[in-house]
Length: 586
Image (cartoon, rainbow, N blue to C red; front, side):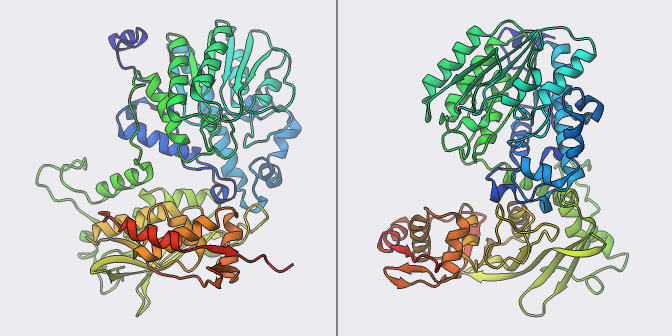
């Protein structure tokens, strides 16, 4: 009681309830590479808030999916029926129908919508802010969806509250980079509803009554924040306010053109939180197609908790931090929260395998350590198996074996369409590079055979089928393996340009000269889409200082303890090299 009273006065830190579920992540494996959406954004924000203690586990509420009866209060019957067609969902999410697991995707959408509804009910009850970690599907209209919005969660929540007897006024403060066309259509003509928006795009005339402000492209922080404050001054008092704290307003966002900084977005949200203090409000992330969009919404929650001054470390990687924590728990170290008494040794899977005569003489071990069962359990704990199941595969299992010369093989297999498919295939060994021993991936393939290549997800060199969309998670798993085996880090040899390009944020080539040439190549191919650039290299159409340039498949390293590279040597080679591309034959 005292804490809540202090928070309302702005004198203390307030606890903010959030609605979240791991199934908020869309089961669309190609959306990251083809559209540029970070599919882990909701997870990243939530993990950071939990790791930093801003949100306690007790603050996390798990949503209940909305029913079709609740959706039908807003959306047309014909449209809702069309959602069972993969083509309808593929159009909304700009992907190929073969990539759409209809049931799993609709489960995610209905769950997020239920989170917004649950947040609205709780906000009215507590007369304060409540956060849904996903949502703000403001482009969904009664008769159709679009712009990555299948159903309009705000309109569904309002309709359900009205059906339950809520007669208060409702405001929608939409600060996504795009106008609230769908929300305006869904709520058009309803009494006691006000919609205000500050966006950076002109999508045509909105219904009468929508207070829409458009800011110029690349708007500076001060101008943008002032426009938001002006909108707040015009917003009538409301009994419940929905705030879309759009993450696509950041400079460099793929689809937003507003162009403010994280600091500017934080000022925006602190100003809104102050204006709505002591009143019921639901906060939603809306869109965000930038690598740091998750930081924006994390900052939103920091502001709501009275921690608007707290900064997020620039180099903080929520995926790495999460996997390190899980890896720590998997080691069952005394005092790690395993529930063991001080000095008590845990019972591990390895302990069981000996007495049960399931030791190395029966079960092969990867790198002399990991059995198939221990790998499968680790993949379960890291969440990779559950996500793969949501893509449409069942009865997942792990096989391990020795290749006899190039390392140990790990295969993950799963059933779909009446047959078993190979989903992940890797060959690992310990290898000495530059005087240190690394976990070396001789082969790594992530496969989604249920999906097919398309114009939105074209085939890259070396690919037989589309990928699973789990390359970052797989890298983190391998790094935790390297750490547990007390190795220097992880290494591999990219056989194609796009593999090195995707890995560039964590890996570097083993010598300054090779790294410098790679950076020069990236610089000179930056005007091409990645698929065109990697094809040009693979087809021999790239020239280095006028001479044909064959791709150099050299070792790339990711050290657990980074060692500075000779920056001057890298720069010298980068500036020495100049690449050009010969047009493809027509």
